[in-house]
Every structure is written in structure tokens, then in C-alpha cells.
Length: 300
Image 1 (cartoon, rainbow, N blue to C red):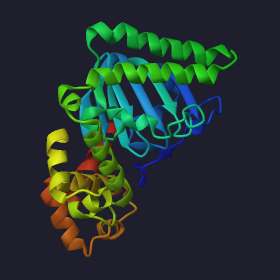
Image 2 (tube, one colour; image 1 turned 45 degrees about the vertical axis):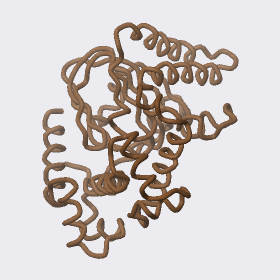
Image 3 (cartoon, rainbow, N blue to C red; image 1 turned 60 degrees about the vertical axis):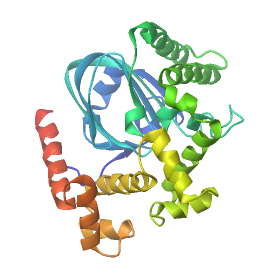
């Protein structure tokens, strides 16, 4: 039987140690304990996976990726994901709360500087080059060793290893385009993305966000085109469609109720908007999502 609502997991629900802020594990035993995680679910925490062996597919916010050795995934709280593995799969998994680094770092938004923690899927799934694979795997082995050691300052050591890991991976994705962008422009883009996250239910037009950022709509459009190849309006609409998809896989909600939750005037306008952006009507998308879930349950 398919669950109607997407479950939301917390670290203490998944951790056998009742730890609320950090969990470090090899992936195979983690998966063996939590067999139902192959179905769509959300986390209330940051979620980091490095695959070392195995294959299959991994779906994050309705985008599907083939699972490959030395592929690393970064996920932020609230994203919907599921997987379908082929044969034995192993690697490492790290879960940590939003609060885990707050008392350790003086910059509360420190993690936001890393592009793989911005919620943009294309920047959050990274295939590690061969020359850096041993170094990244070493960090994960150190995380396992340290988390099991029970030594003084263990949590601070885990935090410091994670920061080294984040910086090492971030250097891989620090492309030429971002190097050409000024720090000011990149900061503006991140602020725009944060404002969308906070206001997409009510603010739908680029001019609304440009006003909050104290820049012109043309400047905002130019910024988005240069840094991510999208118009500012597309960035806003993509976030609304993503939330609609997340709500549509909750079968307890009708399409009309979802339209209302997303602040659309009527169901008809929501359906037209969704189909234009996603290529399917909300009902068609929901049926396809149910079909895929049934397939995963059957294969399991």
C-alpha cells in the first residue's frame, strides 16, 4: 500500500545513538537498517552521500541520476528524494542538522557559500575526478573513525573534517564563470535565491525581488543570465513548480487545495501554469508519480 503523505525524517529517528545533530555511517549498514528509504521522503537536515560501489538510480526533487562510484550528493533540508539500487551498494552517509555548525562558526550563513548547498540539483550532484577520489574517501574514513572514537572534542573534529571536505569539493566546482563574477554579483544572486525561498508563495515577479535587492529588474535579469543562464522570472517559476511537484505527491491534497496553498486564484490558472512549465497537467504528473512509486514498491 502506498503512503499518502511523504514522510519527513529527523536525525534522531534514523540514528541508533539518538543523536539529534549529526550521524555518520557507512551506507550499506545504514540502508540495511532503514529499508523503507528507497521510497520518496524528505529530511529535516543536510544529507550527504558518497557512493563507492553499486549502481541504480537516485531521484532528487524529481530529477533522476544514475548512481556511480565516487559520485557525491549534497542535499538540503526539505528536498524530496528516493532511490532504486541494483545489487549491493555501499559508500558513506553523513546527516547533520542546521544547528550543527552554528556554535562552531561565527558566520551563521557559512554553508551558503558552497554552491552544492543552494538546492540547485545540477550543482549538488558531483562526479569526483580520479585524482581527488582518495582524498575525499580519506575524509569520509576519518569521519567514521572520529565519530566512533569517543575521544574528547569528537564533535569539533567531525565539524573540522566536514569543512575540509566541503572546501575540497567546492574547489572542483568553482568554475571559470564564477571566477569572472564579482563577489558582489554572486552575493546578489544568493540573496535573490534566499528571497525566493522565503517569498515565492506571494511574490511572483522579478521587479518585486529587484526592489528588495535595491537593484533594477534589468540588472537582476542580467545577473541571472550571466551566472546561471536563466531569466529571473524562470528562477522564480521553477521554484513554484518544484513546490507544486512536492505537494502533488502528497495524495491527501486535491489539486484545488494545492493551487490554494500556492496562492493561485483558481485551479484552472494553476493547471495552465503547471502544464506550461512542467509539460504535464498536475493530474498527469500525479498519476506518473504514483506509477513510479508502485513500481519501486513492487521491485522492493
